[in-house]
Length: 637
Image (cartoon, rainbow, N blue to C red):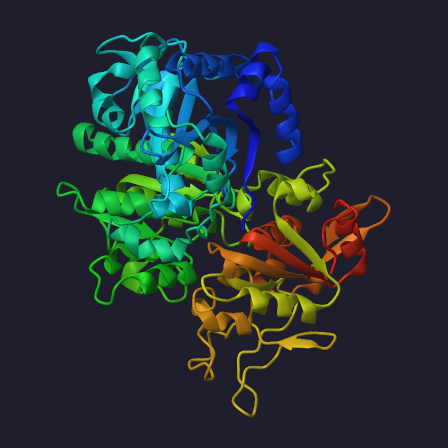
């Protein structure tokens, strides 16, 4: 069962006593340190001093007894936390869980931007953020989708927002008419509406027995994380249960606003969505595609990527004969000979860091040749183009996609540019700490970090590849997926052996396994699949994948072979890269940036697992370097 974490949890009586003795914030600080390995920043700590008092007054006003109180419940698979949750029974002995989004806002300006946005002060003036009721909806959908007691109807869930410093302003601010629908579904209570909220609380929790309900909630199984390809067909058919949260909602609504502006004002726009591994870039892209494609007034909508494995993987999950398949294309469809300027209403480019420099290649027909770069053809073709990008995933010299280049070309075409940065983490078990640790270890930053059990991620170093692979195979059952990948440091055979079998190119000690099937092998042997199918077909577990078949995908568990292209320098206690060890001819041609490419490749490979990463090091000194950055109890197998 996945670990469940909450920073503060006490029965009502103890919570009231903690308020009287001014020790709630102190307990929460200790709870955050022990559960998450973090210390609160100033504004967060001050909110812990203020908001719990408002909750205590609310409970007292409601007159309920024997309920249970928690603050800062960590949503599974994410770094998101729910401010406050209350547990108890109603008068019919039906178990209830109430989640409350707490805000200390006192001044809010409504906006007419699609998707329920407001503007308020959150560290800086006039910051655009989701309406509190919209946030509640995201958390509510997430809980009902992941926690089995809600999915099965064993417990009931109610969500609302409580802005205890805010005063109702009929028709303006948080209560503007534009927010009526979302507030009808997920109510918002201002400070001067506390009596109404107290009465609602009384009707839901007047049966007490809160600790019993809290235990049922915390002990409930958590459903597996929603995987990208499993959700693709549902997303396209508008039946997905994959929930967008916070900054993902901001990204979605920013894109929708730009599409509307293009229709109303003839405004050409480029949106850059920046995010690291697991921040939901592809999922948001698919949501937008489905939403816009379903509108009668929007005719031309496309999803484009250079990644053939990702493109074929998404198509494979759609129903046979699905009308959605033509919406998914490669990047070469948008050259001037095939597409007029601004012909596309919305063009979504996923894995934009993989956009190549040139539009022409050896397969380009004479009539399709163009002087425009690939980036120019993409921005030229669409009224609104959206680029989903991770600037730390550049891995070869012919792929030059970057936020800076996108903005430069957009300006040349007179397009308005807007950026959104995603931080909500769904990969690596929701552990931002693991990603920070990995980037530090690989030399992306200069700090030294130690990975601990508190970082909530299954990271193991194996002494033998055989034992690592055996664990991956054992994990690869039912709905759980695992794959083995490696740095490109072994020859990749283009032909089968004399028996018609794949050649086991990746040989290390007594371990030997073939790479994913080479593209020049037109018919893989029985029991194997084509190279671009390796990630999403079950046969892939029998072959080693590389960066080109792995990038853009996610698995529950990833095994990574760190090859001899990564070395250790004892004098500087740091890693360096060895260009003589790579078998990737494209990487060898990019000598200038080879070091960055190799570090980026291993960052990508080691963040493909949603639940765990198992690693084998060819170089003992590199292994010892990583082991020194693990707390004592973490596994070395």
